[in-house]
Length: 337
Image 1 (cartoon, one colour):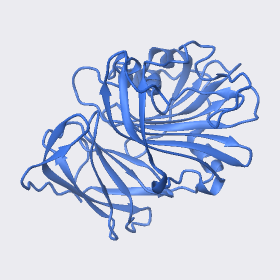
Image 2 (cartoon, rainbow, N blue to C red):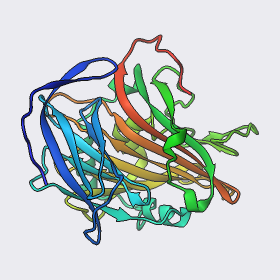
Image 3 (cartoon, rainbow, N blue to C red):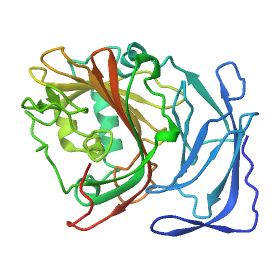
Image 4 (cartoon, helix red, strand yellow):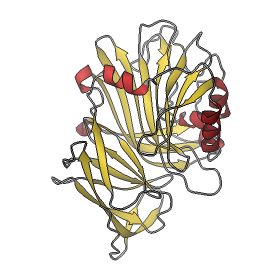
């Protein structure tokens, strides 16, 4: 349910700017059985900033103060045990009732979700045109060179039953800089993974992967993604077009996954798995993109991202919940970590 009341304005103080809040957005979060979902985190996003957040009460309801310049805002709604949902407020209608779909917290379930129903070996022209229309709304150079992101991270080694669970008591501040340290040259032979050279880290073992869920999220709008991947149309979910992608080169490390678009053809989310020549490890990730406004091409900004990798019978997980992204100079500090 949406109610846009207009209380007296207050000021939300961000890390880099102050933004007036002059309206209230309220709604209801339910599960597939239409039962209220308590304790869901609802985040309100502008193109570069998490402007406000709230947690649903026992009845599943929430209320948020909205910026007065509420152009191209989006909601990201999450709850342990449910698939996150991204809502484009510019195209949402009243009443706003958000439905979360339960997912088992096991790798097998995630693998089924992120791996597309088929790996296209023949390009779909309709999917290609739709992707190119979406990608044209972004300027890759804005985030590929000189950006700073601030957020909270959760890093853990967990069992399959806990995969996807974020322990909020263990969230830690995180700052990442993109476009400054770039260990992956964007080449066909190395971008989706390179041999780790025997150096074993929690994030990688035999293969090291790019941070597609974070500072390399711009790759999904890059001309190289367009060139390197076959695309096919998948079903629509709640009016959200889905594009299945699979790398055209399969002799080395490649990716296979799904790119979800908003109804007005912008990036909503991407989920993928890395596929390596040997099958000794499994890894993948997902990213939710911030909203874009009409006009000049925008930056490719993640709202939230997750990376996972299997380590024997357990799984290494990195989850980042961003708060803001800002432009910075070439001496951006601190470095990516």
